[in-house]
Length: 162
Image 1 (spheres, rainbow, N blue to C red):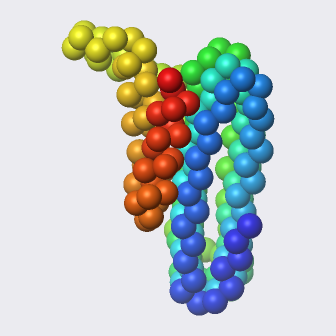
Image 2 (cartoon, rainbow, N blue to C red):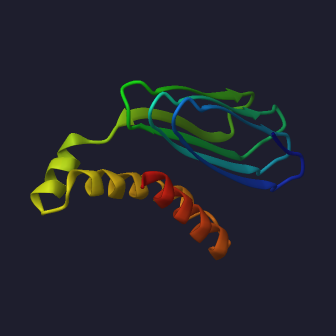
């Protein structure tokens, strides 16, 4: 939970998850804009395999006095198994008209056309799928400012795919 109290306060929240077996993820991201000229950007990417499940609830609440506010929210989940489940519920609560805000959520599977293209270029099906999954996380990993942490996260993703 983040409260943007001061004028010109900013928040960038980046999240990622990679579920397998019967793991369950509850992601609650909430931002309250109280000050003027505030900015919030929430980006979450997740991958689910096996019987893993995720529930995402994101709320961006722009208060009456939070003029000239920018508030963005994106949640994307990639499902690798027919048994996995994902629920996503992004919400915007806007109490004034001087706001630029957007929210989106997607839940889907690996694009079969992408797989077909990659396998037609002599990349094996499993390697192609793994490359697509690794690429799916790139928008989140690019936001990690600490090189060592970003590299550790990339290594964890690669290890999960092996």
